[in-house]
Image (cartoon, rainbow over all chains, first blue to last red; front, side, top):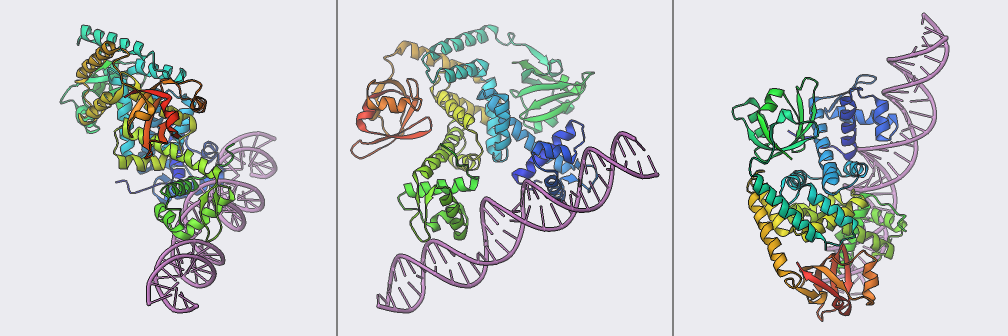
Length: 250
Length: 250
DNA sequence: TTATTTTGTTAGGCTGGGCTAACATTCTAA
DNA sequence: TTAGAATGTTAGCCCAGCCTAACAAAATAA
């Protein structure tokens, strides 16, 4: 299914073409060159190479588009990029800019199993009662303080409070909503997927089950479709499908 | 001070030479070739390149040794490698083998600020009362369970217990030892550095202060010197120096 | 429609980093 | 002490991926 192994450079080209295309500005040699910080002639060469691998449709002076195979590969690269960037930003508290740059460099080298674990870990940090944003705030503080963990005693009392709240609130304390009711940027933990619904199979295949973290990315004007991110994958769900997924707001 | 920017390939050569030298088997072209999975003639080329950069002492048919500059750079590469590997193993719970391989590929691409944060983060996970090995065990469980966090409720009770223990024990509950009393492999959190001691300045410069994690790596036959790892750096301390550092066992 | 500008391609060069084949040196064992 | 064997080097080739310069096509303005 894979078959094609690309150099770091070609992966970059693919990724950039994907993004340019997504920005609907149609990928032009000139723009690719600018983003790659490379001369146009180098782009031509790369395009020929990508075409030879069946990843782009390319004829001299013609339109540049990704083949299905190329798009799949591009999405894979983007997933690696975003997973790294999100980890750097959300867990390591690195600035967007630095995180993005680092992800750019490292995305070509991360092996699949490590990638999957990293994604799981970032999810775990967000979902675990002992983790969460307060924990990350604790890490930031730890970084600032030049490594004194003394006042992490405070941090333990925060956990105590959280746990008490959790116990008091029980199940009803949490906000459970249908996925289509989240605003873009909001995240939730899947608590139920209406079985028999057509989505259930599709997303189950991706390993999305109860407990998984979902983030709403974007909602189209009429509330349909809903773009969500799950396990690093971007998914487009129809409103009806999103309704069948119940999540607990984070 | 840096000045030299090496390609990923040359960094690998440097690292391998460093390791071969450390294994005291003196770096030989043949062995370098084997580890790099490359032909001997390629090694000659690389050595010339490294020599040109003032990183190795090399003359045809002669001994291969690292210059001080080369050794410093090699240690830097090794630090990146180990930081990544340790993070993969200790935090992401990836197998040694896979972790090492991944580190090998990613070590060339990780920018300094990200590296430092990653090291800090791994340290934070070990030291934070909300983190620690039990938390990692929770993550492992989470991975196995295919992402159900439901029983993380259990996990909260673990925190509760830990916090109670911590409160009960107070300061006296923890084992505080001089660093020279740890066994290889043991880790501790610095609680005090006898001021005025000659080490204090040296290690303060590296950012080692109260709260920092130290791991004893190796102790020479007569207990002197003691090799420790701190913030990813390998340090060799004289026994007298190690005595002046008091740590709380983890 | 034509002239000019913009955009894209080709040709050919350079570097890094690998390879093989042939040659040189050093080591080792007779 | 000397002949192999083992090890290391050189020469010359190849490929990826960048570059510049010159040229070709397309888009735009007159």
